[in-house]
Image 1 (cartoon, one colour):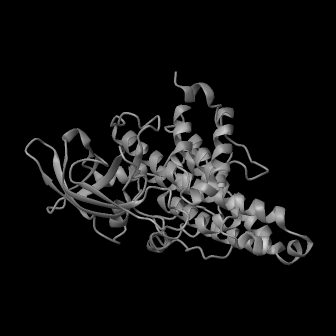
Image 2 (cartoon, rainbow, N blue to C red):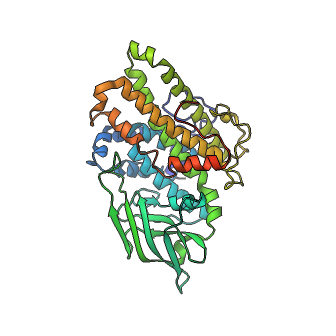
Image 3 (spheres, rainbow, N blue to C red):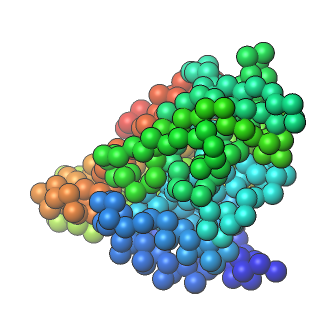
Length: 398
């Protein structure tokens, strides 16, 4: 029995949290409390790239929690984002890459489950190509030994820590597609570090340049890219959504706590609407996670049957009813939009104190500024919904 199975309580299915401390999907093991406290205490240093955010993930790895099932993984990501979104973003990338291995039945690289080795998700081009927004930029050629050689440039990838592994899509000139993994430090791999990033300097982000990188056959995870996308889509988007709701909830908590009588009066409608939308989106995310993933028409983008604009009824979905891709996309987009609104509300209420770069208010606003460009970007998500015939959310509340 693993440490995670020993320590992690049963899923808190059916809960309806009165606060925004959790998503109601699983109860975090008590042993995570000191880890989360350390993450919160170092958020400012991580923001300034003066501390290694991976220390928090490695601590979770020591507790056997980095490969936790999706409900607990979403709760962990949410909890991290309430304290330090850069750390939550790193966990999303690592846990998504674990999901890629799970979906293909590929054993994890040594040290990945414990956090000794970092995993990077470089799958954005695969989803962008599916939406007709770009082509996969990594070109593969066959090797006589059954492996492949890969060349090309991946313009953005995070968790590019020395000693780690990267999972990417590749394409052949004849139209074939595959998903491969390679060592970050393999021969032919070069990383151009990206620095000066808003709130993300500690995320080991960079441009990945590959020149005839040899991928042995055992490191080709799958040659069926469409099926792979369908298998991992839910985890990829739902953990991102959990991150958005964690940051949004922290900002709303700070806004409510900091509001004086005047702010509570003049901003009452905005505060109430944001709080209501947060709860609706939490319910929609919880329903999707419990449903266990997307339906088998995952690339169709068909709108969900009977879904309300706010997702208020989604929590009542039966576990056997799969969530359509368009609903995953809608909840992800609305959660990101809510996060922008929530951090702006916090800024309005906190005032000048929140304009100081060292303040939590400023950090949260800068963390939220990343969400429109995190892949899938806001433009990508809006494109998917429009193509599926689903009403595209605006920046206002539902």
